[in-house]
Image 1: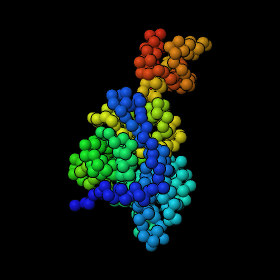
Image 2: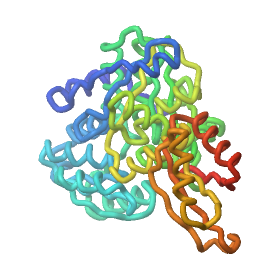
Image 3: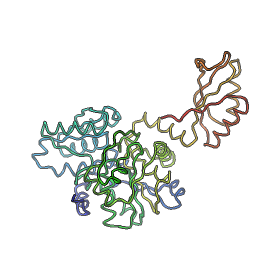
Image 4: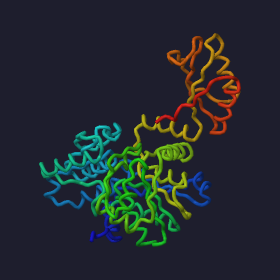
Length: 407
């Protein structure tokens, strides 16, 4: 039987982290509270040092290394947040660090990890491939491999998030957090079930990288044949053996959310909550907005990280607006004659939609002689407003084709 982390382990981890990590704020969310009909709080680990909760587990793991292990250095693999956590912890403890990251890792995370003093190796297309390279490096050089989630010390460090939650919101009835490998949700569940067994603990995975549902059905960790999601921080193809043992015993539910759900959550957090959160950090909120699980109030959703690539943020905002019906892409086929574009734009203005961009397209072979296709992107006030606009244009004789939301 796998020995689980205990409450005493997490309390000891908290002592190690004194003066290293910050107690992150617990902020109320009015839009979520209104939607759920009860208090909803946001645990802002996006405001933690290095931009996520990961430094908690990384520091505890590294602080407990022997002098000989510290001298050999450490190696880790991560898409970004664990990388930054390890690099920061290693720098604070004076330990040499090497981090393997996927080739497509977000540039800001790569730059930040370098900034904390780690040596970076870009290897593989996924975190799993980077993990293989990191383990090989550890065997070849003697560096200590720091697993991103499947270690007692790492789980103990992550569990300190829940100690803070239950102190800040002792009446909490549900805690919701994102799940990749399962280190955070494991630590949260240990604390919740030890101190408040009635608290419901819910883990959330991106539907395109959800390894836990099939693993729980199979009774053991199952590797996904392929996976992809904008939530790179929780894109893990296989649960850890240790984390699976915790999740299967202590976590009440694991649910999934779509990319559209995540985009809507990011947009709501940015627009209404003034919180900059990465996709992996928003999946808990996404589950609440989508009604993916039954929750009792008060609810605490963990915003696990805020390290988002600004370019991705731009795409996600556009995607979130489209998913919410507030950003509409469409093409209009009309007669190619002077004044036609002005007439079209005037009609759009009459319906109080804001044109973001417009492009004339004459290369479509399906166009008849004398026709032109106009591609437009417009901002609207919501799905109903978008539908009214399209209906009015079609009633005026325009051929309107709606484009898919941006990926």
